Amino acid sequence: MSCLPQNSTNLCSSRGQRTRLWALVFLAFPLTIEGAGMLGYRVNLTPSEPLGLWRIVALHRPAVVGDVVFICPPQTAVMQKARHRGYLHAGLCPGRYAPLIKTVAAIEGARLLIGGTVMIDGRVLEHSDVRRTDGAGRLLSAFSGFSVPAGEVFVHSPFPASFDSRYFGPIPASGILGRAEEVLTYAP
Image (cartoon, rainbow, N blue to C red; front, top):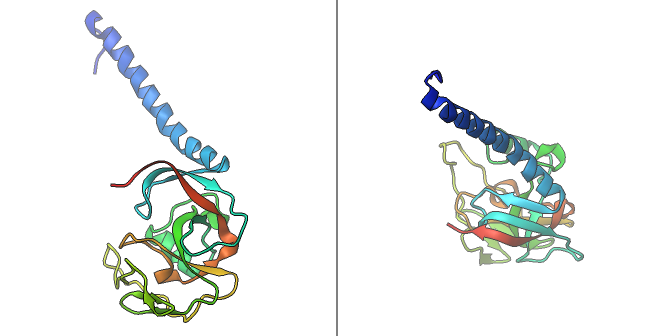
């Protein structure tokens, strides 16, 4: 595009300013999200829970069933594979994982039976259908353990395609960053 005609000089200048502004916004957005994370806020961009801004509230007691929490995934081979497949995003947790936002569905000592759905202490967990393949047709393996070990929690999301304990099993409760509190969210 040429800016030689006098009538279009201002147009070219304003387009350049808009381009620089969008570039600044594009570069600042990730820094804003990371800064918010350091201040105890998280932006949830996954359908595991409503989309939007959440606050991490300190949990001054052990997690209980029903708590919606932010939890750092452990650095395991299963999580590395999940990251490679795109199930997990980069973030501030050890291993550069982003924290998961999930509901605690079972705590230590709970008996698990995972087949076509998840059963906890003999009761079917709602919205817990276990998929055999992911959205790209890749095989998924269900967790095959029998109980939640001491110091661990079984986390779940009602979203059908959620990557949760159905597939990776219980994870250390020590990874809980805090309770997830909605600030400004949208549930599509």
